[in-house]
Length: 547
Image (tube, rainbow, N blue to C red; front, side):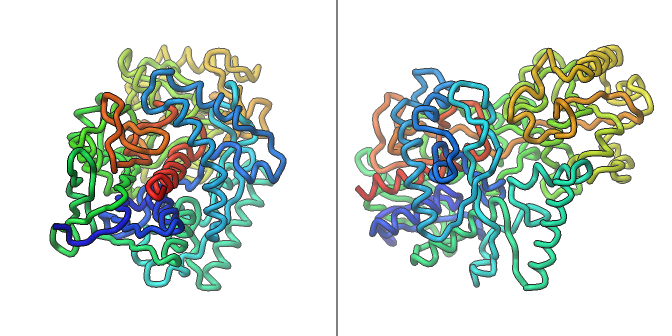
């Protein structure tokens, strides 16, 4: 006999879970949201907080060209026609769910802003959009959460800067726009302290606003409530067993259960089971609670799984002073005066491409020559002009050199030997790179050829992504291939219902987010792609259960 019952049980408090909770409550249902950790927010609160939402109402209001057809054309670039987790119906449901999601968020007091110029990651492909389809939340004062502030994940950015402000902020040493943006954010920080506000930005701002909206609606949200297993009757999921208040309890879900609990990036055994070496739970930047038991529970219930070998890969600079053991390195690679090479000294990817693409290319190259870690090779021009791994423009932090976290030498040959890179290979690569940089055209990999490449580039250069590596000293930093979450999970349909391997529906079971198979396969196609999909399908799941 169940200890309690409700209409819908939602597992996980990331954006999919909070969106579904709000949607269900607005539909007149009684949802219960379960979060295994003491704090609400999931990996979404640790993210950039950007939502990839094609043909969204904010674009329409501002006259930015987009359409349903263009969005569907773009999505079709990335998956084969027979991908069970990305059927045309599921892609259509996502695109058609964008406007209702934005309407719901704005109706609940969540102000959204366009990320101007934050283009699709493959804007040159059919249906791609160079103006950008990404949205984000306005800066948020977490004091509005009252006593729930202590139960909310804290801000992960060192300053209250929106994700869309980071591109200009990283130009602080090279453009007046960068200096103005730094001053604006500095004044914002000071004003927040003077007025006693706790200013959150990025994912923390988005999740904080959604949590506030859910609390205002009176939603039942429980922390320290970890999923143990799904309960089933006659092949239908009827509820969950969860650890709450120090004991295992049963919660009956009359309409169904939504799993929106993230991936398995913190589960070493699962990563070794499904993913290729080298792999480590130490390289992930995802929520510490993402240990995969929700995916295992769905698999036990009969769910088909897809893309379990993939994650949302992102290069990372190992830094034992960082809370996560590393710093994400992504905009740095777009800049001039830097190339990424393997142990043979050769480039293997467009450094300004999607971080997911860079990660996958490193794994592919690693089968030919050691490319994990890959080496980010730069000269003094890069260090003087740009941020690297949270080190401001200028010299590398002294402790990084003392701990041998980065290598430095007056010659490329000396640098190569210190890194275990083939000196002749590196010399040849840099010679060719410098020749191409003089012309401003990357003839090998096309760095700087797309709007997304140039978004994080240096606008003072003819090709914002290219500049010679010629002025000593030369630096090299080893980049492991980390991630911001695994992206494999249960295969779902257009209603977010979980499917069996034969394509039949597991009644009463829904999934959204990184525990569900992605709609663009092993590709990250635009800023906020993962949480954009999670939010839309969280809403769709709740709507389907309500209906």
